[in-house]
Image (cartoon, rainbow, N blue to C red; front, side, top):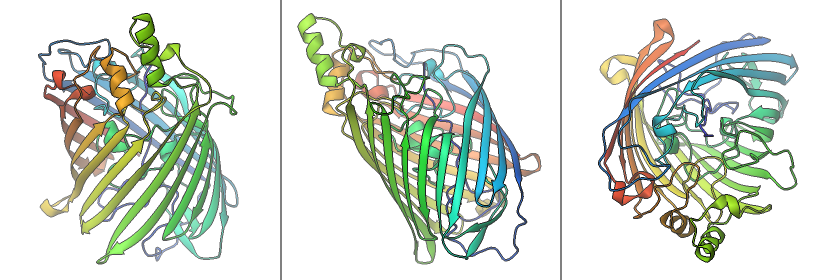
Length: 452
């Protein structure tokens, strides 16, 4: 019973020298000179395999959800088919069947900023077929000016209005539309760490596999975008089944995006706020009950309808040279109630840099380096220190310290084969916020990604 975000990002295409535009957002670049012929169908495929290993650890104690001191390497994989069909003017439907299998290190537990964004916490590592996305999207033009969309993942080729209102209804990942970043959003081609692919403290609505059902409303212009979504929450924390009792379980997300130019270089800043409502437990209530009974605190014993979690995230990216860009995220949630969907992070800050290989005559290569620091609220700390478990972390005790993670990757582009091979290294200090199990943990991975 685990969660992994399998979102896709409209990342910089191989050989491109500028940051990509977020999915379904108007381009901030000059309109294309040659119009792209409109196509009624779009068909694409991706497959990603990640083999990951960490060093042996010597720790004074461990809990049920600790990162294992010793374990063999773990392999994960996903395969996705992206099918798009234009229905009428401005209307299209998208269908994504997906197969996933394998396992994350320690069952994808023991690190809040987990080290593989392609893993699921599921009991059966054998391949499973499921519906990732099925949604209808309608675009209403505001004016006659157009740009051009290229044929891409969940994107049909053809003219697209520069200014529009769009409505999307169906099953999708909330992160398909929110918290985009050209340099750090897609674990299939960029950073692997959960708290680098998305804002760590954004407990965004999703089932175990990272998807939800709901609607998104967008207002898009070349320089400014506003998005709002209302979506379903899972019935249980990190559960596979979505709760269709919308009156007592739902999530709202609002994001404002501004595109600007600094000394001729494009930059983007995004401000996101969210509010989740579900049958969450309050950490303090779980601890007080444990004190009365003399038992280990357990959030599953004190869950009640109508509890809320609120928070925000700031997300920035800036091109600083022709083939070099910076990104940063800061995020926060109140941390009073248990984590329900993403991962057990209540505060997070990240900073990173990404470069293409143009500087060393490898234009299809990418290099990325980033650091992220994660923390939790005082209530969350007290719960873990008393021996409580969430759905990702729990050592049975806690000597609190900030979880600190650094990640480096190098992606060797193989354009002839529409593929890339990426060695990846992560350093984790204080996994699951525990200085008693500080490691450090050295995580090495190799990723193979194929897309066409």
